Length: 151
Image 1: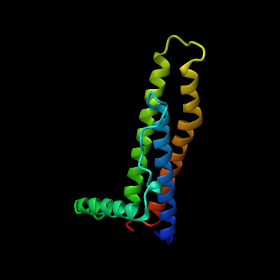
Image 2: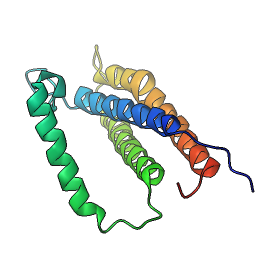
Image 3: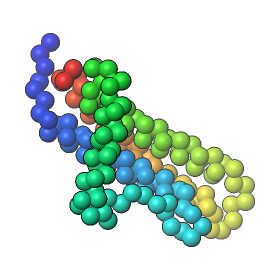
């Protein structure tokens, strides 16, 4: 079996897409679970940190992850890790969709304006497209894994 050469840019593009997907899932979760003041739950805003603080946090996170890497088998490389990360965020999104559908089914009042309409809109306009992106991203990662297994 001949393997196509895979550049590090291919993996980096998928990693960027995965980060954007994670942010999209975080935004949807925040949208569904607004607090009473209508504000989203706090998120880490790296853009609000100084360059030195952001660098310190990144180094600390890398150190934390490197300490855990000793237990990771050799076959579990960056592509496999990326696949698991995307699948995890996809599962989170599916849990939220399940919760949303349960809320819609449990609402028997349907007053006007009905919260069900808002929830259905979130499902159609946000969750379903994000689930489609998850499926597309997982397929692209799988394709990359097959192009250059073991790298």
